[in-house]
Image 1 (cartoon, protein in one colour):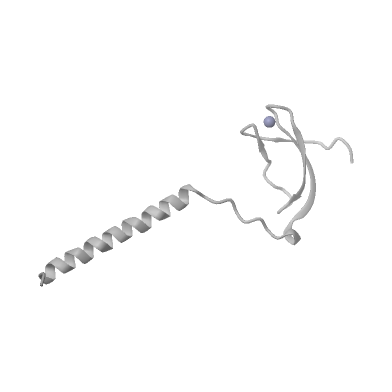
Image 2 (tube, rainbow, N blue to C red):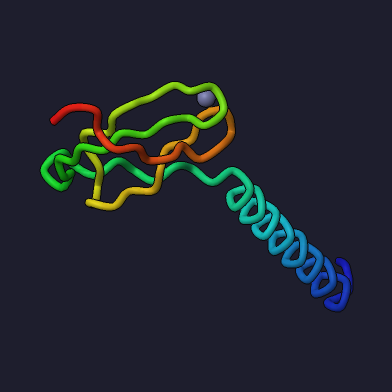
Length: 88
Ligand SMILES: [Zn+2]
């Protein structure tokens, strides 16, 4: 039969280990941030914006976005710049 103090110390050790384990998982979660869930199609707005990659010159049009002023997409690790539509 172990002494009561021994049991208490073991319990404290287990508790500390559990807290460290939980905070470790929390840190891992914050490092591997998942992209936000896509909103349902009904909440998307039809937009018409052209973007050009300043690095390689590729152009693309954004036709749907969760709001009317979405952040520019990225290409070649740079933000694409918005250009005036060629035709409308
Ligand atoms: Zn590019």
